[in-house]
Amino acid sequence: MAPKLTAATLDALPQLLHGEPTVAMATLVAASGSSSKKVGAKMWVGASGRILGGVTIGGCVDARVIEAADDVVKSGKRTLVGISLDDDEAWEIGLTCGGQVEVLVEPLTPDGDADPILSAYGDVCESMARDDAAVVATTLDGTGARLVVNPSGEVVSGTLGDPALDEAARTIARSVVASGGSRTETIVTPVGDRRVYFERHAPPTTLVIVGAGQVAMSLSRFARDLEMRSVIVDGRPRYATSDRFPDADEIHVGMPSEIVARLDPGRNVAVVLVSHDYKYELPVLRATLRSPVGYLGMLGSRKRGAAVRQMLADEGFTAEELARVHTPIGLPIGAATPAEIAVSILGEVIATRSGKSTGT
Image 1: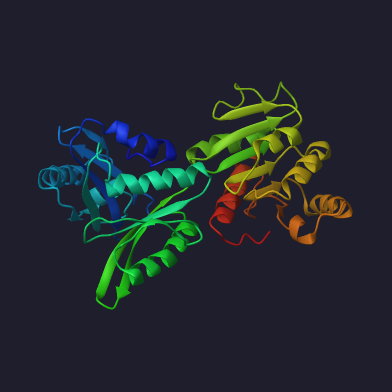
Image 2 (image 1 turned 90 degrees about the vertical axis):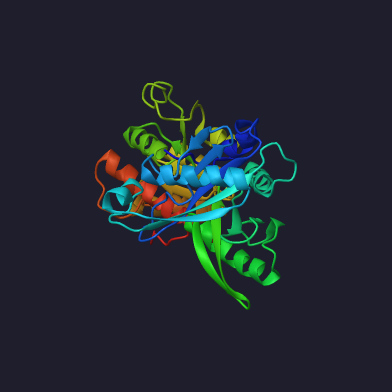
């Protein structure tokens, strides 16, 4: 499986590749007919022959890419490899039938001081350390220059070599942050069309689950498959245990409102209240409604949700602040079992993160 470029991976990348005079980095930049999140998958091939990662699951595409990477290591010149696939080959990367994939293969110098790729990724690491996303743009032709853009469309560093191209790339980068996936776009310029690959990087969503019941167990399990971190919070030590939550990244026992406040929830945090207990819910809501938390949801009926909102309104919380609470929690999919409710909640978290209306 191809590695995900998490902040930890990016930060460790120079050390992982240390000792190689030149490394070819291969990136799957396009796959026709597919919305697969495999776009962005990477492989590194060193001058010594060492291989890290893969752009597919190890079939013929990877073999072709390794050949191209060996050539790039020798020549020092980047190349765009187009590969036509039959049905079986397409299946490997999530296409339902044959198609075309494109892989950008570029040289980088792990021990160099001014490698543009590693320099751009260094800026990405700094953004992610601030709990912020970043997009790295590069043309599929040209020198391999990078433009790093933040979620507001502001340039963090670099240039694509043309102010008009930079301006257009900044606009597209904002939509790439919201969409949740990397992609290639064609930009029309006065001197011709330019294809630009936009690589999205963002900290993982952290799911703070208040209440260690059956729904929470399903949430934690599914969150790992969705590459989210899960944090269990409950006041009952017999419920919040590693035996019940083997997939949780953290388990905290104590007063939930105090624990959630210490976690300092930001925009990449989703707080999910599934305790169905006023003495837990109200203090947590008071602690989070005026924070930048990205998602806030509470289990319960519309009547119960309205009652909680009214109590908080009587305390001075505004209608705009109270509208942030998703209750009834989750997408309206007719969920009944704990696992189904967890699916509906995670669907709503994903939709909210992607800027999609959930109707709740």
